[in-house]
Image 1 (cartoon, rainbow, N blue to C red):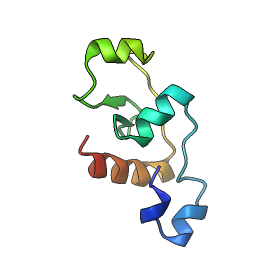
Image 2 (image 1 turned 90 degrees about the horizontal axis):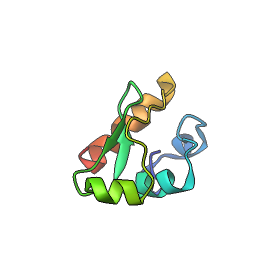
Image 3 (image 1 turned 180 degrees about the horizontal axis):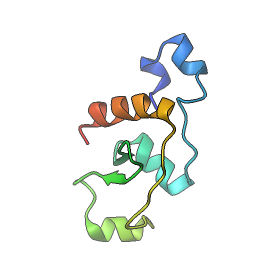
Image 4 (image 1 turned 180 degrees about the vertical axis):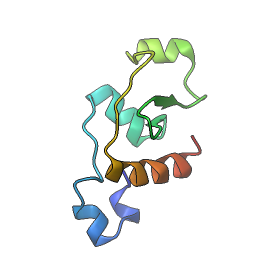
Length: 83
């Protein structure tokens, strides 16, 4: 979730600093086009139009409930990406 280049050694080894996503969603997550809120609702960047979202196969109401430990990393992800 939090990129290795800005993570401490401990964060790099923390299993909570990872999230299992399908390939199309993972690349968008890594590139900053989407994230998840603390309730697990997918947040999509305004940079992706509705037609782009359809072409990329994004579900409209994807929910992936994070573990409490993942929430801190997701908060960092959202802040860094301004989502």
